[in-house]
Length: 179
Image 1 (cartoon, rainbow, N blue to C red):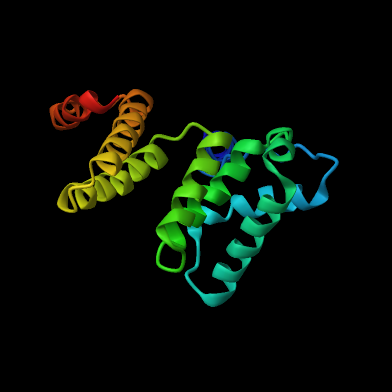
Image 2 (image 1 turned 180 degrees about the horizontal axis):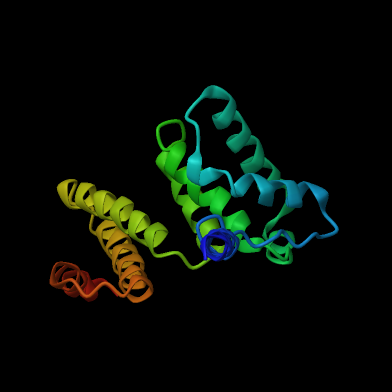
């Protein structure tokens, strides 16, 4: 009986570790471009990003690599959504180093490669700040332009995230006049 319990315990332990979803990773599908495969491998480390000079330099280097390849080549890679992660995390972590226009560009490139609600939300916030500045400066042309962008990205955020918050619906309703 004692041996049976020990064997049973070991089986449960082995199966729970073997089939647990904690460290579940889909293997990288190799492509013809080794540099992009390396970038995909790097993208898997971004959720535990170390905020040191080496990590920032690596992130910038991979963003430059992706930019040099062109969007068509990136979209043809089997793990293209992982490449979008590099742009998204670049926009998040390099926000203080890059100008706002570069951050917008990074978020837009991330969205081209993957449909991710938080990037839409971040773009909506950026354009909302620009909208507020245009209203303060009484620039009607920019106000309309940025109002459209706020509506577009906030609407995508709500649809993709499934967020049914009344607060966001009210804001979206306000900016619907600009669509």
